[in-house]
Image (cartoon, rainbow, N blue to C red; front, top):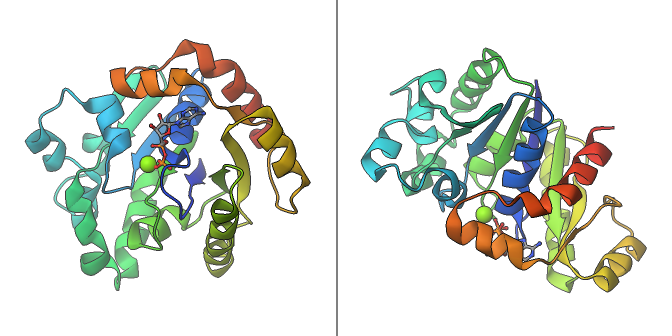
Length: 231
Ligand SMILES: Nc1ncnc2c1ncn2[C@@H]1O[C@H](COP(=O)(O)OP(=O)(O)O)[C@@H](O)[C@H]1O
Ligand SMILES: [Mg+2]
C-alpha cells in the first residue's frame, strides 16, 4: 500500500481537484484506492457524498475513527469500482487540540490503514501546518503540491518541503495546475521539482464540482500525470 498526500499551504490551488481525479484515475487503472478527506472544509466529501445527511456523515467520519468511536473499515463509502472515500465533517477542526499531542492516534490510524486491502491511499489536506496535514504526511510515499504560476504559491512550497523533511518524507513534487501553456513553460524554468505533465485550466472542473460528478473529458491529462508519478 502506498500513501500519496496532496498538500499546499495555499488555498484554491487545486488540491481537492487533484486528489479526486488522481485517485479516480488510479481506480480506473484497476487499483484499489481510498481517498481520505483530511480537510475540515470537507469539499472532497461534498463532491462524492453530498446526498448523505450530515448526521450520518458525522457518525462514520475520519474524526470519529481517530476518536476510536467507529472503525475505519465500516466508515469507508464505496464510490465506484476500486474507489472509496473516508469522509470528513467540519468537526475534524477539533483534531489539532484533541490529538495533536498524542502520536498514538496517528500510529493507530496508520495501522488501521495497513490492515485494509488497498493499493493506494490518497489524502486531501487543509492549507495549514495542522494535525490533519501531519497525519497525512506520516509515512507518505509521495507528496504532490499543485502550483500555479504565482509568487505566493512558490513561496508556500518551502514550508511543505520543510514539513516533509521533518517527517523523513521525500521532497514534495509540484504539479502545475489550472495553468495556461505559457504558465506551465514558466514553471518548468523555476528550480523546483515538478512534473512534466501539467493540468490545464478548464471549465470542466467547475462544472464537475457543481454537479459532484467526475468529468470523463479531463481523464486524458490525469492518466498522463498518474503514469509519470508512478513510474
Ligand atoms: N484545472 C482547473 N481549471 C479550472 N478550474 C479549476 C482547475 N482546478 C481546480 N479548479 C477550480 O478551482 C477551485 C479551487 O480548486 P480546489 O481543488 O478546491 O482547490 P484547493 O483544494 O487547493 O482549495 C475549484 O472551484 C475548482 O473547480
Ligand atoms: Mg480543498
